Length: 204
Image (tube, rainbow, N blue to C red):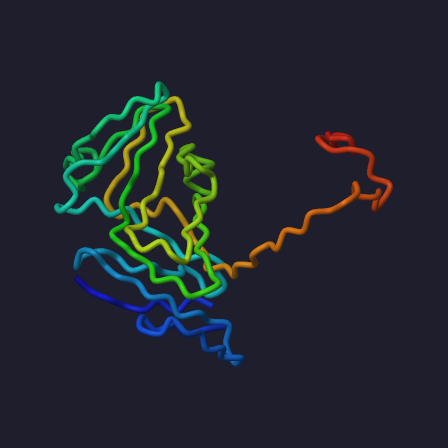
């Protein structure tokens, strides 16, 4: 088991104090990353200007089963197997409409007043119709369990998920909490806007 730190965007967090120190010379945030298994791949930015870091599927030998739900909302447990079509790499197959909770092997220690937002990777979504079931996943500051990816097969074909696949991307985001104030009167018209849901027309 390994504990590391991934440099992401203005604060430094320590596990004991959870205090944030702003470094005005950079735009980095220090986020603690705990690797549940030694062979788990650390999150990584793949270009110099990437807004998001990639998250990889972890289906190593420690992972025996994966929880899956189908379109009928039935819970199915699938066994992780070595996939003959890809040099015997470990993985699972998702049927159309199935959603699997895929482990990453990572636990994030998120700084105070931050969250991690997880998105599908655009190429995988467009070409294979593999998406996150909840479109955008949010990891709250007080979540201290393993990050799981709710991978949904939105295609009409069986899709294979392999160990090491980069299916999701994530960013560290400041959190602004709303302070709700009850109003005593309706809101006045602010502009010439008259409605919603396409009221401005459709471009073709």
